[in-house]
Image (cartoon, rainbow, N blue to C red; front, side, top):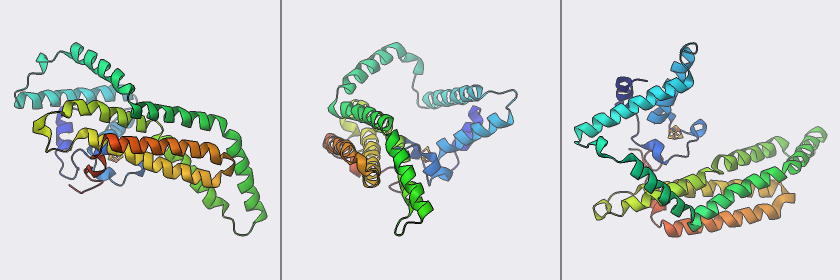
Length: 262
Ligand code: SF4
């Protein structure tokens, strides 16, 4: 997509500004796809790529859109009198790397990374549990056992697995963004504005809430795994409390669209 098309698309008032900054990126399940510029750009690129399958690769299209975004950024910087050539990219990259290393040592970041690994480990070792459950549900269906609903139960399990998998890495990513962003917000003039770090922490907290709910459903339905799942829930719950203590205003952050129509 070229710069002018991007500009025209972005000017459409139907889009909620910045909605994509504090969402869970689960577009398939999002009720705001019609109001999201990010989604619209993705769809437009997808459409263009499939129409031009023979002479335009998907990567080429991505580069084109990134180029257009860069040009747009430069145009806005020029209008605002900001000299982007004055920016020392190497120095910034070095500082970013240093800061990232520090953030990785934070209790919340470490706990989130542990969680990511624990999820992988649990799924790696639970294949037999799912197989047994599948046999049990098939049995219930074939024998028409009263007071059972194998379809509903399998749907609950399937959905819980999808939710856990969706947030498995996102919790860590959002916590890192919250920790990282906080440093740049420590300016008195910004005090009255909502903080990006709180927004990111809120997205992480919601991801934790949803993951805990999903694990509870698995705990109810996969009783053999009850103890292991309980350990994971306890770990997540502690992370949730630590994160709330670290970002006490996060729950009150108003996410455009999701918490308030803007
Ligand atoms: S706001 Fe919704 S549609 Fe837009 S990127 Fe986020 S999940 Fe996808």
